Image 1 (spheres, rainbow, N blue to C red):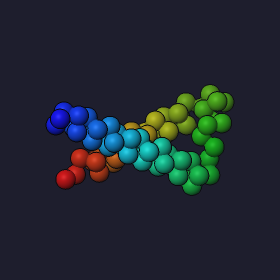
Image 2: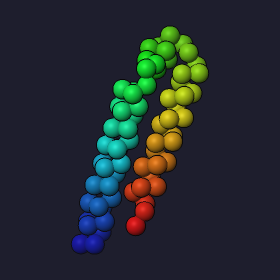
Image 3: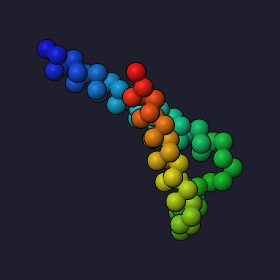
Length: 69
């Protein structure tokens, strides 16, 4: 029984983390005046690097929040 409880908790926290990540990325996309998606489609490598850095930074913050007791 403890195994199923841990599995359920892990799944629930994973869903919370994914929702926080996507919500943060959506908020970043709305607040920033630059259309990064279009810039990436146009071949702007710098825009892709910026978006990648934002994803990694937000993921690090979400992980730190979820691991704090």
